[in-house]
Image: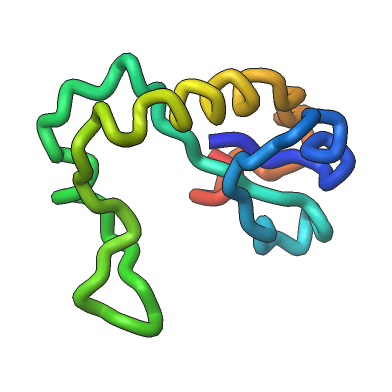
Length: 102
């Protein structure tokens, strides 16, 4: 997971890295992305089972769904490399005593 300023994504050429607004009064305008390292995934499905997030439009659709790894590995490797290119967030910008800041 990484929180970053919008200009960081602009600095990555041809970025297709999924991201969304980071909802925080401490960092207005920042973005959030969560990326899985595709070569570390064992296909166990634990992440899908424990993730509490669901689609607001269709509660039967979870935020994470398993799919055949070979169909997605090349795209996810490219996204992983772009994720690693994002600058790390200065940890002093968020309070550490909150879930969002941890």
